[in-house]
Length: 142
Image (tube, rainbow, N blue to C red):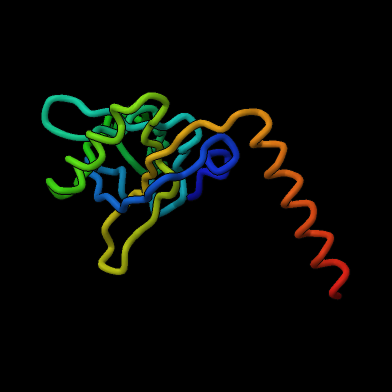
């Protein structure tokens, strides 16, 4: 599950891979691909980094023990990475956003997050022009 809109809206400064604390049927729903990262962002609270506004849909086979879809989830990073992110995120105009949700080789759910700066309108236009030029170059080769 990839947040495609993030690369259009933001310029990525650095990327990190974080574990995520899940409850109950969330991992089964993630394995089915029922994750929406569009509105997600990360915030530092008392004891760590939290992932907010990410929707993991309810598991279809779940019972009354099913999880809440938009609850806050704690991200698992080591102390060095947390300190780096907290210092950098305090700068003006920087935010931490989720880019990708995936399952590791060992079967754990992971989130790729990025420290990002919002793009201006003219930056977005330049990216679109570059993409169109690359596409035209590929068409001419074949």
